[in-house]
Image (tube, rainbow, N blue to C red):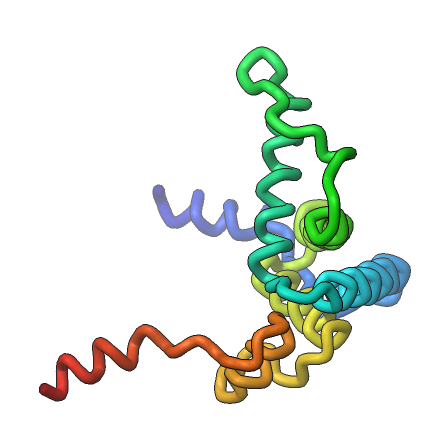
Length: 171
């Protein structure tokens, strides 16, 4: 590409937003409201003995994706499950999964329709979700015990896999 074409290409490129604008305050409020609903749904799943929030919601999300594929491409995929018949804890996890899908859609709107930088949008919506769930530092992993206990009903945190690798290197 010649320099003239490169310069012209840069001129036509829209500058992406990297901070909230006043005109998008309503969308920001929708994100916060949705994050708070997800936090409540997540707590509902967590309140069921023997559940793991991450695993149960991920399973529910996979069921929702199967349903989406069957509805979108009925000639290629068949309905495997009737999600209306699910019981606890899958029923509660499906509620949380649907809210998380809605949150993801709202995040996509920031980038696709409202002209926000995708990296900023993902980071900002991640922080909103973390605040709703109760995390203070969503990028820090130093409090792994607290983070693990917040997501599962198990009092014992998992052992990091990298410890085994480190021990092999030291030997």
